[in-house]
Length: 106
Image (cartoon, rainbow, N blue to C red; front, side):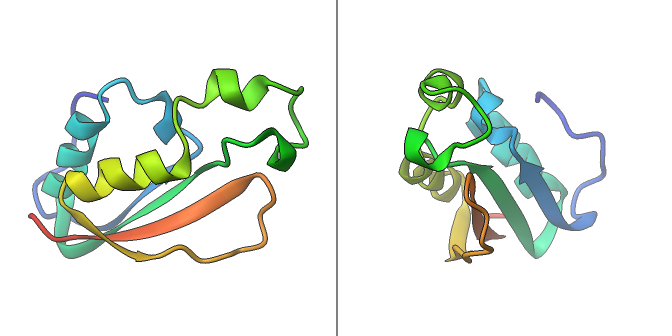
């Protein structure tokens, strides 16, 4: 979570799948993502809907205890860190959402 061991401007995209909700210091992690992304690089974020009605593979109440915030909060964290939201495609996943961002401050 503290450092990504890749050179600056070295990757086209970063994929964060079902782990963003675990980040203790998301701003620090997002700054590292910006550092390793090439200009206009993409961040793809997939995480759980924070809504029991959407979660069918875990017991009731799990998502509220396990996932620290909802999609709106995570979207705000990522955009505040220097990314622009490009899209939120519906890929037909019932328990998860997808957000695609572009690096604007790197």
